[in-house]
Image 1: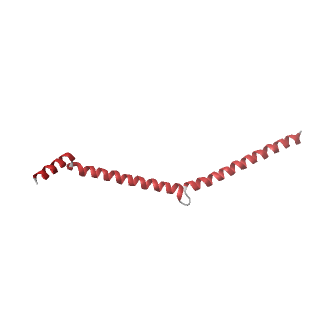
Image 2 (image 1 turned 180 degrees about the horizontal axis):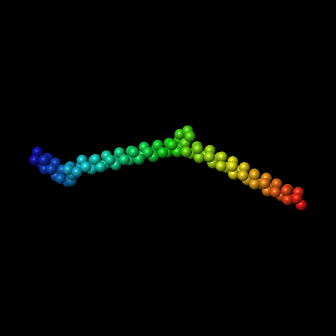
Length: 94
């Protein structure tokens, strides 16, 4: 029995347990994990708003880009027509 106690005492000493600040370490780890969960939740919510929901930012920006491209095409056509009209007008005057 004495050998068992010596063995257990040696095992406990070799483990170098620091019981006095274990609670503080666990509390710090708990805060880190809670913060990580908040960060994950916020990131997933932002992703959902940007990409997943109906009316998401991606959908809205894609639609806006389509309208801008239509405007650009119309402006290009208008410039072409305007140039053509100016040439005809010059010819007509001369």
